[in-house]
Image (cartoon, rainbow, N blue to C red; front, side):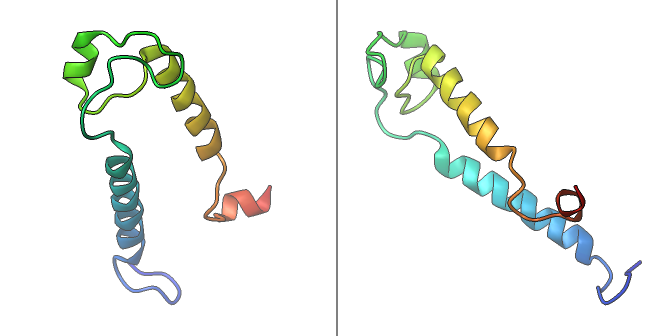
Length: 88
């Protein structure tokens, strides 16, 4: 059921587009190529199991966790300007 000026299914199409965009962005951020033997940041050796499991790995687990936390904090900002964020 459409509401206002939107046609049937418009909301679901917007949700699908947002999910597709997020998946595409995540895929482009995946490392590729040869894995490094030592961490790019702290120069600690990267275990062989990690290098084999993740193609193109460049960071040790500790540095990757720090990077993931930084990305998560930056992603918590709502850049799309939803009604909820505008009402606060």
